[in-house]
Amino acid sequence: MEKRDFDAIVVGSGPNGLAAAITMQQAGLSVLLVEAKDVIGGGLRSKELTLPGFVHDVCSAIHPMAAASPFFKTLPLQQHGLEFIYPEVAAAHPFDDGTAAILTKSLEETASLLGTDKQAYLRLMEPVVKSWPCIDKSVLGPPLSIPSHPIDMALFGLKAMPSALMVAKRFSTKEAKGLWAGMAAHSIQPLSNLATSAIGVVLMAAGHLGGWPIPKGGSQSIANALASYFLSLGGKIETNYYVKSLQQLPSAHAVLFDVTPKQLLQIAGHKFSSLYKWQLKKYRYGMGVFKVDWALDDAIPFTAEAARKAGTVHIGNTLEEIAAGEHTASIGATPQKPFVLLAQQSIFDPSRAPEGKHTAWAYCHVPNGSKVDMTSIIENQIERFAPGFKDRILAKHSFSPAKMEDYNPNYIGGDINGGIIDIGQLFTRPVISLSPYRTSAKGLYICSSSTPPGGGVHGMCGYFAAKRALKDVFNLKAKPLI
Image (cartoon, rainbow, N blue to C red; front, side):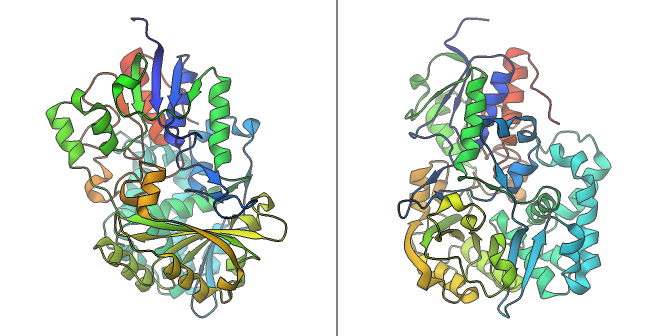
């Protein structure tokens, strides 16, 4: 093989870029990882956005998929400084009457607290929880590959492929329906869409199997641990390296891009076939997010006691209200009562704020590229379930969809999932192909959340892209998953 500056280069240091770089380096190659910003991490960054001493997660905050990731489980990340904190209540879903439904690690406890829907919940989740160790690599892998446990995967698919509204018909109580709606709304699309049940089932299963952990010190800790391990293997990282064309890169046998189709076309479009370029140009992005961080004088005073004990709080009241808000945003309008995802990390991790003070993190879904300031609307939703919340605000910082994209070019129009994961793109991320990570140009690969399995901090997109590149270019095998 002809000598190059590096065997492989990875562009972008989000969780998938880091995973790809690690996988290539583990195979004994020389790997360069380049990052546009001055700090690595992509969606795994933490900063003092409001006041000194208040550490906020810029994008991702709570990490059920990091704990569930088959790839991360193979890495010695604890030895590189990563410590997870597990709230007793993974997620709470408060209602207007002051009560709340909750997700805990115990499947039985979660089901029992749903009253008459206990058995319906167990029928939905118990088979998934039991089969998850056999199907996790298939669920979080290329969709057109042959599963090692086809019957279990087929049974999972029967629950994952319907719309969230269809699955909600299994339940009769507002508690079960609301809890389910909050989970499914992580899909960032109307709950009437096919396959919106997939993310709800996976998140609930992750909660029962491993919990919804908080990285001590901030989400940056995950990126730092991944980078530390990569460097320990002999890898190289360069920051402040914004790649806009292939000519900026040193020579390499393979280049893997942790970017979405829009940037990939800008960087390397001239290398691609007309068919591949046509497919990338047709790639669709989904709703954006509007995010707010707060420095607080005290913890959020939720009326429901369970919500005060939860790492994550889903604010949206009933199934009907959440479904209406998500539909409104999907058609380009502004929801006045949006579904709000809120994290309160400082309750469990005192390092996030000065003694006696707290942080809060929240976002809602909005039309892609929306210019509407949702700060007060989000605060009104929180105040609705936690009277007195606004009185505890010391400072705040808002991220509009445009600011989110400016912070991370992968967040096109505020889309944090790398493109909508609806039925039209579930099996075609980013193009129709048996090998979604391989581009039409020799040696060029895409490893971002625009490839299977999509968004989330799990590194699986990066792992599978690197596995493909290792086989194609170097005739090597990736380290197997547990």
